[in-house]
Image (cartoon, rainbow over all chains, first blue to last red; front, side, top):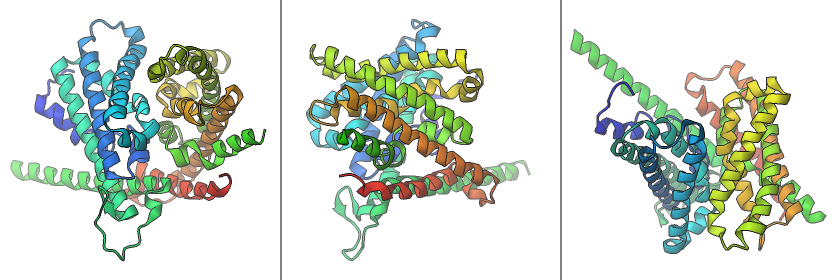
Length: 213
Length: 195
């Protein structure tokens, strides 16, 4: 890390420039599998954020203790510990959500976002910056998965957070909440996000040019 | 015996790991540009998954349950898988240099391939008390073969898409995802095969 980014930039990085789902395409499995209902999307997002922040913190604290060669197994153990904590907490306090998320809660441990941040950021930065990065990435992940699940729930079941939002006569497109819908919806959202990013960059460029002229 | 056949049909076609369970999407999108590498990845995953099912069965049945450490399952399983992947990497390096080089960076990524861990956990929760030894290994192998089937088919589609005239905004991941979606619709057709 040659250039020191401000704390704010570290946080925003996860939400916009390196959004785990829309820009880096990491953590696809839970994203596609869970995003059939908004409540599940939010639950998954928050659970992953908790694991991201805690494992980033611990790994950052241990960054000078863990030998280079065994860093990957060490990261895995740290991450798996926090995933187990989340799993047990959710089973105790949110049994229904825990049941609907099923096997995907223990599978947070193999979510590439968490591993990627541990390797690329937390193991090279101070604890405070690591925590902020965890929050930023977690927020980006949560926002993206919530957006995806909102689109899928509204179109696929005609509801939002379980409440009917589409008119009674609306025939829900069940295919959208079935597995193929996951791929299709994410593909279309990606097209839109890419177009938005391009338009945004063009405007920025035009502005920069105006500034020079 | 018939239940084993059910497990195979279910694992390869009906509950295909990628197409209906969304497990192993990272390698599915990452290593699917060429059919050869896709096949290599599929074979590596099949090998790891079969052995992982075997080992995790023993650990679950004879270590975790007797010691009432079921809550340690995630940590124990992921460590077993990490060790297995390292072993496969060393073995491949020795016996097939070209395959080793082709799979390159993706081999260590099998550790974070959620399909392997997902199948291992599913083995323990599939039926009351979990699958037995043979059923676990059969389920792991069948799941991995389904993974191989899907990733090789998908790689073939992407090879064609790479030379075709896609609109600019569909190039790369959006096009790949929509292609995967259409493939997944086809796989939905298997749904009635078992109950």
